[in-house]
Length: 260
Image 1: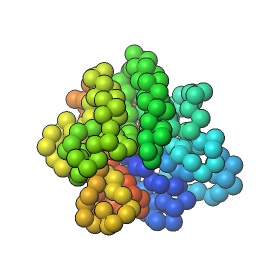
Image 2 (image 1 turned 90 degrees about the vertical axis):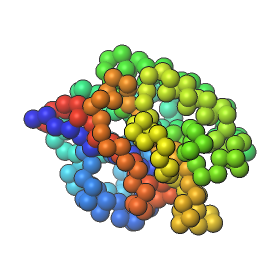
Image 3 (image 1 turned 135 degrees about the vertical axis):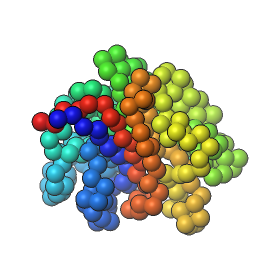
Image 4 (image 1 turned 45 degrees about the vertical axis):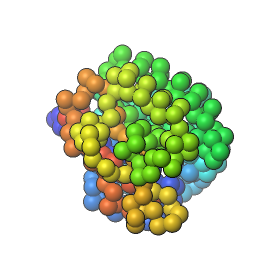
């Protein structure tokens, strides 16, 4: 039987830390059909030696080659038909997962951070340049949903202090320009489309009580192919949910997906 799906995305800042902080309770309460996790920070060897228990979910893991760094994971509610597409050879940091759900393709992404002193800005821009044609190739087959930590606040409304951060990682002209170019290729930032003037953030520095003062950034997105937009609803930033320096974001997609 076909049904709409609730899609979540969350940079959990370490899967083991997230579990200690109640990630299992979060799953039981929110019951996402699909959730993309970023920055799992666990090697494949340690993951296999660690007992994770997420009842009701199929786990798809993509660890970085570098131990304890970056990485992504996608959890799919049992019974939801899907197929995992091949990992890209150049994605050695575990930053992209691609799962086909029949009527759309789901991408879970952890876009590189430009780094302190912008030392990885060049790498980030090269990564973004390679990522876009990959997504457009997928989109020739069917619409795509791209969830994740994009590590960029696109517009001034997307961070609390734009003037002070104009040359800082996540708000440089180069990064914002990449995001503008990405969206112009036919992708929709679902939250900003629904709420053009709403100020809400998804990440806060762990310094200076930034979260309690709501001095944050919106860098976590759910973007979709323009052709899929009419089948989406309820883009939400769950800023009341704790457990990481990021909060979850979500979207409902009513495109038919068959249960198996």
